[in-house]
Amino acid sequence: MIKRPFEQWLFEEVEKEFSINRTKHHPTLVDWLAVSDAKPLQSGVARLQILIDEYIETWNEDELKMGFIAPLLAEINFHYPKYYKVFTQRLFSLTTENVEANGRVEWVVATGQQTPQKPMFFLQEYKPEKFSGNDPLGQLLIAMVDAQIINGTPEKTLYGIYTLGRLWFFVILQNKEYSVSRAYDATQTKELVQMVAILEKVKGYIHQELGLEPPKF
Image (tube, rainbow, N blue to C red; front, side, top):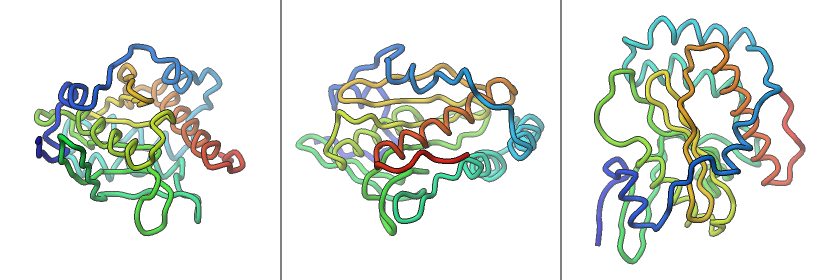
């Protein structure tokens, strides 16, 4: 029996223990990242880019979260009362025949009001620029595998992001396959435009999954 908190999992350990495989250019990830019609940055996001460009080399983890990540996600607004909302620092636990694991998930969009019921979209690891330590992809994957078990529908795609300073990586998990995007640099205007469009797109996916009208941006 393996007993280990989420933050101590490496991605290769998640692959081995849960028989999941990494696939390059998974069609679902390719579709999610396809944002050729992305809109120019709104003024609020443009201001955030100025901040991250100025401070990314000196921000600590909490400063990165409060100064850039949280306000950027607020621009997209992943709250739809009575249907889904953002939960932060919520304890998740996973138990199988061979594994006991638990940990606090940094940020997750899920149904439910007081507790997350159906997790759909994760963001893990607000790590500063000069980070060295635990494996952020491993932490994200173990949380997403747990969500697959909670939801009971492994065929439905789960979406996630992990960040390392200015770099954002987009991740999907579907059945026993997962895929990771290239790094997107939030200090580069073209890349940030794409990142915002990708975030808006996953919000649309959430509405589709729940049978809601398309979101308005």
